[in-house]
Image: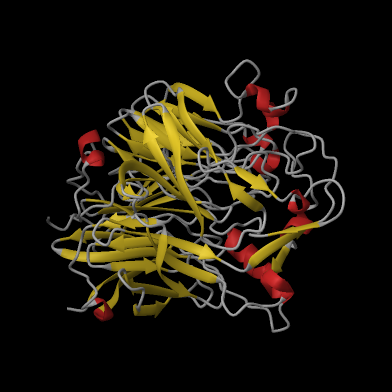
Length: 576
């Protein structure tokens, strides 16, 4: 592929909100066929493929030469807070998003900015999670979900706005941080706002016109299947947020989404399972119809959102070949479900971090039983493990079809203690948690009451046996999304030492590491331009990773660990 830049003209596209630095060419339309069978040289969607693997087949960079990686180029975004989006690449065009609902198009070979778009946000808008997790590509457009709950379609070459569609009520603090999911002419997004009483939903829009095609809510209403799991009209403000991109099975035309916690957190006013919160749901992409679900934590009182979509893996489990949906839960269990057109059947679940709430899991249904002395709510303070940030928060897992291993970014030995809940009433535009926010942010505790030797982990699991194969441990937290490659590597950042690392995918040995300007919770990707493989990741600390570290600072006797902010895109290649 020829280098795409042909000019150095500078123009301001005043009517679109985009700043354009150069006229680019040769953008290849992203079709359904390309999304179903992505070329190894490109990274066309959030996790590289519809199945959510976080896997690149590229192997020019491999376990033997990864120690020779060097920085090819870097790009400062000009933004602070958590930079979590993957660099999306199509034929030399790279797209990144940043906090502040900003989208930047960059030449993937040189790092030269092509154009930039930034959504105007209300100045007084409360931003609970000031981040953005990337874009969707479809046809000749790039799609951005914004903090003020709009879906924006832009021309991928110029940054010119094609259309903007309102998705949710920003005044009710409905907001979007996820990368949209593109399939069959539709762009799908979901709403965050479980802590502000927003009723979660997935909505699909026509890729060309922006017209809304369907909307499916994640809390069941009276008269619907599951409606009897909510008392009265509590479903109307019941949470169940969608804040991570779904996965998609083209054969069944089903998209799989993870849903967040119910609202408010105390269960006294919402007795019942509260379907379909803290679940995986399967939606028909043509109609939005709910076809299947599995709920991981019924009547969730621990804020164990299960918003990460399951990875879709055809594998063998316990001697049986299945089409699996695999999910490392915030509740600290690794879940294996079997997906069929109308069901998500339970196969197995294994704890990957310490959980002292579950007393058993039904071997047929997968429904957990609880130690209710560890359920927070009205009454005395209650401690539980894992913490409300979970054994794994939003950072995605990865699957390598060569090693046949499933990789989890985990945090172990962290628990929480919540005080007595408040009797909270819903009020539009305000927090709807049931606890003072100071109590929530100060709830973190160490397991056994003393600082452990390690907290963060990268775990490798054999799904066939349900056994851990290897574990790499860190002294501090791990908030690092994972990338695995055909070169027998796992790439990860997410640690407070600001390091980006490459591990041997087979045994977990660290083979390479480098320091970045800020710590990184960005999703790494890999791509190829003109025969050269690159590894790309955004650094930029903030949001929940920073909140957890601040909470740990309060538990430690040592000087507080402070991590510099500021977003930088880092792109690496082998030394020439």
